[in-house]
Length: 356
Ligand SMILES: NC(=O)c1ccc[n+]([C@@H]2O[C@H](COP(=O)([O-])OP(=O)(O)OC[C@H]3O[C@@H](n4cnc5c(N)ncnc54)[C@H](O)[C@@H]3O)[C@@H](O)[C@H]2O)c1
Image (cartoon, rainbow, N blue to C red):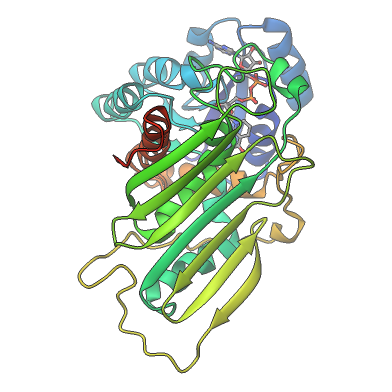
């Protein structure tokens, strides 16, 4: 195979990001689109110059891989159908909203010998990659604290724009499961995994089932501590921040850009950020010409620049063409889901300490 033919499943808010990304990847091609609302598929098909298929089967018959851009609680169900049809899978985040569903999708991928990646596009942002490499190299010293602040804003109209939004069944949670999952993923990826959480959540300013404010104290596997704070209630929506502190310095990234970078040049580096004998997967080594234009989603969910998606889809395309694992696997995508579900369990128990 020299070109991977992709099909988009779900033609709502995020599908255009995938379509535009695919248009700029060598070895990838958008082939067809599908949505249960046929008119939406037709509009997308016209826009991107590909046929709108009338059934999932018809889509599967014409592609090698699919991008799942459907409500989160449907990822596993539709992904498993794709796997059984022998199609490689790009799944939007989160992998699904329960551990069981996520595990089923991973298993279906393995059983049917298809590749699976779950979108966590900010892992491909240059400054985030540099932060992780620096932390991993030991330059920051032993990591002491890692915080993620996602003080975003969404209107009630946003939640009312889709029946699935803000529901336990299909959104799986609120500001953490939907918006915050990116930063939960990155802070646990940088800090080397979460051990336990103690959390309080609220539904403070929207008419929804799920939380729109969440604050958790975190203990990482290394013994480092931190805060995960997510919201969709904080007008006007502030740039998300990752703050990492080690014995040799502090790095703060705001909106995927470095805000503070203070590392003691004279400090000793014994190369063990998580303590001795603990290692982690290398950070992706990718090159991007377009990153300068990147925008965040603090107040406008559509203000997402496609470059990071493009980098992840490019990695996935290469994974298929060269028969290797994608950089972000289903197994990795389960980690932030576990953390968020532990936060919800803790909040239900009035902030009790819960193991992830
Ligand atoms: N990576 C990111 O930054 C990012 C940003 C936005 C959304 N997302 C994720 O993308 C997914 C979709 O979100 P969205 O905002 O585009 O939602 P949306 O409601 O705007 O679009 C979902 C689309 O899926 C269609 N659909 C529903 N059930 C379907 C089915 N069974 N088969 C085919 N199509 C079906 C709907 O008709 C709709 O057009 C969610 O999981 C969300 O978390 C990720």
